[in-house]
Structure formats: structure tokens, C-alpha cells
Amino acid sequence: MASNNWWNSASQIDLFQRRFETIHMDRRALLKLAGAATGSIAALSLLAACEDDDEETAAEEPDDDTEVDEPDDDAEVDEPDDDAEDEPDDEDVDEPDEDDDDEADEPSGDLAAEQVLRTNFERDPQSQDFNKDLYCGGEMQLFAMLGQFDVELEAVPDIAESWETDDAVTWTFHIREDSGWSNGDPVTAHDYEWSWKRQLNPETAAPYAGFLYDILNAEAYNLGEIEDEDEVGVRAVDDYTLEVVCEGPRAYLPTVVTYIAAAPSHRPSVEEHGDQWTEAENIVTNGPWTLERWDHDVTVDMIRNENYWNSESITLERVVRPIIGSDASQLAFENDEIDWHFRGQLGQLERVENDPELSEQMHRYNLTGTWYLVPDPNFEPFDVPEVRLAIGHAIDRDAIVDQVLRGLATPAYTFQPPGAPGYDENTYDEYTSYDPDLAMSMLDGTPYEGGENWPDITLTHREEGDAPRAAAEAIIEMLRQNLNMDIEHEIGEPVETYERMWEHRIQFMWVRWFNDYPDPNNTLYQVWYSGFPDGNRHAWSDEEFDQLVDEARGEDDEDERWAMYQRANEIQIEQGAAIYVYNPWNYGLMKPWVTNFPRNSDGDFVPNWNIFIRDYDHYQILEH
Image 1: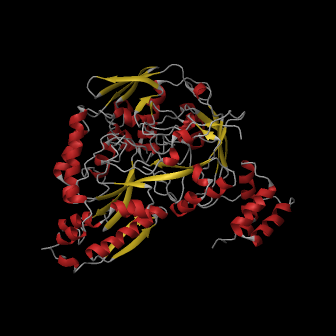
Image 2: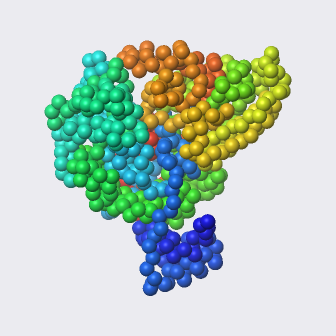
Image 3: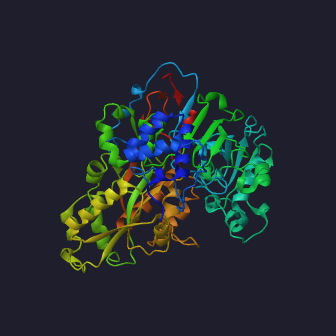
């Protein structure tokens, strides 16, 4: 068993020193931090070790068996994970208090001579190859897609300066001629054709190639049902014209090809270096940034890609990202080692809000996602629809948001979150209003009348930090008080728990979804459609629901499309397929010398998360 006393390990001390050399912390400050974090005995041990210059040590890479299948959220105050909001009316959605995010509060002054932003990675990336693995954990701003999401979560031109379609089946993207890879190669339509076919090639074994399945024959090629890649519906007509043919009308295609799943890779680098092509000495990027240094488990440093078409509009010159875990990043921020601590923890929120300095540096942001309960209808007692519906009235969403999450969320009633196109403002009070008496009465005539005769019930979720855990405990207590349910609380290992979920072996699940791209196809179809040949995320199914979300994919009349999704919402709510509880927000801490925050039309701060990923384009560093 590995020792918890890392200060007794020479290799770990070496790694510790290298990390702090990266952010230019001197020896005195390092020892002060060690004393604060580990106690005087550890500090003395570290002092002795740091004074021993004769012994050369090599850093040991920590074991990391965690499969990253979604954007990292282990320590967050509720993720999102899955972004910013769509201008809902104030009376429809109670947003978190934004007084501390007023744009007028941003500092002003002269720009610093060196434009360097420091913000941590919570773990060393597996790679930077998003074309092969969407969740490789790398830096998304290294690459540019055909479009980019702006602060309103709208797909706008990037490498493609325009696109058009007559029928939503065949799309033409016009590639700008003034953008280049970081080595000077021009970015062309051929780069996207080759990269997407690389992702779909079965030999690549890209785990998330399904994001490209809207393209004609993409799925068949990926599954090995056809072997000729030329049958896939993407081709470079010439160097600067890309044609994409879909399986049917896909009005949302621009949002899909703007998502990071459609990132390109640099073919000569891939062919020369294989899986090592994204190492700092090999990588070639087409986004606004490229790697300057990648010292594994220590730091990822970037400089601007001057060949990117819009590079001159960016003020930052470098971004330094030391590898500092979520449990240590706030301490690093308070020690002036990083400028942006992006994932605050719920357990620290009260302290931050009550601290006169930190409270001024705190900024809330929307995660564009949803936390929800899934009572599997194949398990007792959830095979009784009235039980599922009773839960909807037994949970006080407002109390969870205001008291448990301290305002870091908004109540949720349907799946598509506020801020994303297709958001349904209807709260469906008939099924979602908090009414314990109504909830209990719904059990009348069932085997569980009066809250009696419950079988063993377990609420399961994967380990994701303190906020989801606290919300789950509150839900369990509400169901105990209002329905007399005695519920066990299971917090599972992330990968194993998700495997059980996909195998429909979890009775009652507490789970979240962060939007990958801002369209209901990503939520209602990809999560809830039950007709996928390789399985579906949840066990509930309904024929009318499936038909609606399937047909909505091909509907090019936007109003009709939104109406189809609204009817799909109604079916879910009426049947108690899921109980949507809250849309998570988070908070971070930003140093006062960082200014020019990206903000949407509501005035909300929109940092890099899962949809909008271009905050480095905005920030400026003031003299300090």
C-alpha cells in the first residue's frame, strides 16, 4: 500500500518542487505552503529534502485508473459540466444572485507588459487528440472547428467563414483561406475530411465517433458494415469547400460540427508520430493556441498560434497550466500561484462568501446541464407509475437549490437546460409542484398506500463531489419524510457505476447530463431514445416519444421542431420517466488583474466549459 506521507518520498518531493518551479514559487514560499498543508513535521522533512542537492530523483507518475468519459467534475460544485443560459424571463427562472458578477465591477487599468494567464489542469491530460478521443482531457483551445460557439451558445463561423444548405441534407462549408496550422501549413477542407474519416475508421477505435453519425454512412463505416471510406458523406470538393451529406435532414448539423468532437488532426503529424503526435515536440495545431511545453504531471504551457486567422484579436500571449488537483487548487489560488481557480467547492462557498477579499474575486457561471432522478420502471416499486409521479411532488426543488446548494443552481422541470435552444419554459406544475400531501395521496390504491410496504430501495450515483452528494442526501430525507421511503445511499466508483447504468442494473439513479452541444437532439434523443442498436442509457421507453425525437432530427421548420420536443417533454413528465431536479451552476475565483470577461447578453460570465470554449480569446492581464 502506498504511503500517505508523500513528504517521505524523494520522488514525490522532486515532483512537488518541479511543479512550483513551473509557477515560479521561491523556496521560502514553498516551505510556507508545505507547513500550512501538511504540518510542521512534514515541512521540516521537506526542508531537509530540499537542501539535499546531491541526490538526483525522478518524478513518479501517479497511478490514474480513472476513465475520463465526460468533462472532469470530481470536485465541482456541480458541474457544468454539461454552460450559459438562454435569456429566460426572470419570473420563469430564478437565476443565482449575480451581484458579484456585475460587469461594472471588473477592474480597469493599464495592460501588463507580459500577457500571461495561469490556470490549472486538475490532472495531466491523457493526450491532446480530440479527434481520436473526445474526452482525452486535453486543452480544447488548441484546435478550431468549422464553427465556434459564442457566449450565447450559438454556432458562428470560425475556420468555415460561411455555410449553406437548401434541404438540410446536403451542407456546403466554405473554408477561409487565411488560417494556418501552427507549422505554417494551410488549413483546408481536406483536413476535415481526413480527420472525420480517421475518427470513424474502426481501426482508430474512437470511443465517441457516434457524434458524427448524422453524416451519411458514417455509422455503417464505423461499425464495419461498409469498408469504402469514400461512401461516407463528407468530401473536400476543393481545398476550401467541404461538402457534408447527412442521413436525412439535420437542421442542427452546424452545432454538431462546431462541437469539439469535430476537431481536426494534422495528418502529416499523425502519420509520422502515431499516438505521440500531440506531445509538445510533435504537435501541430490549427486553433488559436499551440503547445510550448508539456512536462507531464507538472505543466501544460501554451503560446499563441500566430497562423490562426484571428490571432491578432487575442491579447493573451501565453497560458500556463500547472497540474494541480481540485483539492489543492484553491490553496494555489490563495498563494498567488494561479490566476483562475475555475472549480470552486460547495464546502468552501460559505468561507469564500464571508471573506472580504475572496468574495470580490468570486464569479458564478452556468454549467448548462441537469441533475435528475431515474426510477427504473423494471424495478419495484418504480414499476408502479403512481410511485414515480409521487416522487415528483415529494421533492422540494427550491429548498435544494437555496439551502443545500446555496444558490448554485436553478430548479429544473425538464431536461433541456435554460440557455440552450429548445428550452421549455413550462414548469408542468401538475406533475412537479412540491406538495407532500398530494404526493402521499397518489399512493392510494397502490401496494404502497400510506407509505407502507416499501421494498428495499437504494439511490445510486457515482462519486462526483460534495454538491451532488449533499443534494442526494437531501432528496433521500425528503422522500423519507414525505413518502415514508427508507432509502440507502450508494456512491459508486464512476466507471463501474456508469457500466451498471447502461446495463440497466440500477434501481434508482441520481445522475447528471451536461450538454455536449446546445440542441435538444443532444438531450432528448441521444439520452432517451430507446431504439439504438447498441443499447440506451436508461430503461424507460415510449413509442410516441421515440417517434417524436427521431422525426424532430429531420424537421427543418424550427417552430415545428420545438413543438415536437415540447410534446416529448410532456410524455416524459406525464409518465414519471425522470424527475428533473436542478440545473447546476458553479463558481470560480479570478485574480483582480484579469479583466475583459466573456459575458452573454444576460451579463452572465461564460468561461470555458463544455460548449463555449474560447475564453482565452477575451481575457486581458492588467499591471499588478
